[in-house]
Length: 414
Ligand code: GLV
Ligand code: MN
Ligand code: MN
Image (tube, protein in one colour):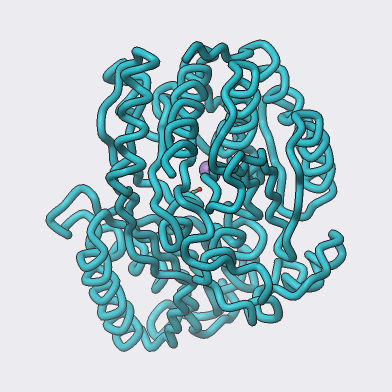
């Protein structure tokens, strides 16, 4: 099959989407259900309809664009990713999987291919945890991993619940209707930039993702005693930020000494109260991200962090509370979907290697309800979540061709 990717149009679309943002290009900030996110969604839905796809949305704001197959009674093959972007992100994270998925469908259509199983493109809501503290909201709800009651318990910084925010954005249904049954899709594939250095360093075009690492995140609130920075003597202070500093270094030490470089831990946020230079911090809230390719090893490190926090708490007379936000198991790709990607790489004559995803993706949750695999393309120096994130036109086009060929094979697999 001859497949021509319209590189020029795809790159123009990526650039246009990047301008629908709260900050100036090349940086992109697009927080879920913000004004810019809603504008981007509207623009995308026009692109989906223009391509002849039928569009529906669910109560969580996930968008589904379907190319009806000849055997539309069979479960569809799905692909997709996200368009929300963390503050000062780049323009490729997630977007390559959504606009690339659209171009894969258009390219297949132009080639004369007609699917047996329908092909569905999904734009997932809030892959990034920026607004509600938990990542992959849309795919968690689709796969039944997140209880719909989270509608009332998840809140943004303003204190607004998920329910209020999504309803204000026009998504009015019940969250309990979002979940899809096992077998709703026959396969799920996601095209994404690697967000790591391996493909770029080895000059390989396609990473065939065999596994996705297990992510966990939690907050730690440390409560001590505040006071005047000048008139409180040092002995006997219960400075919450000093205790938090010890804990931050303990988390780093525990991740470094797990026995594997696959254990990674990051304290990404630290809020000190009352936040005045001449006041002893009485309360500190840390946001911690802990991941491992091995879920059991991650949980062992988590236990050690808990123990370390308890020890610091006792010694410094600081109250410590740890609240888990998520602790998800890792996912393995489906041999059948991997085989379709490998065949596609041979047909497209592009270099490939197996790779593990250390970032999480909506695919982690889609794997709960459908056979899943991912296609990675290189990003320059492995940089992502930064305005200078970059993927080359030719790598994007090759990734889209591999996605298109994989979708074609899987849609004919009846
Ligand atoms: C996804 O954005 C991640 O943090 O892995
Ligand atoms: Mn991201
Ligand atoms: Mn992403």
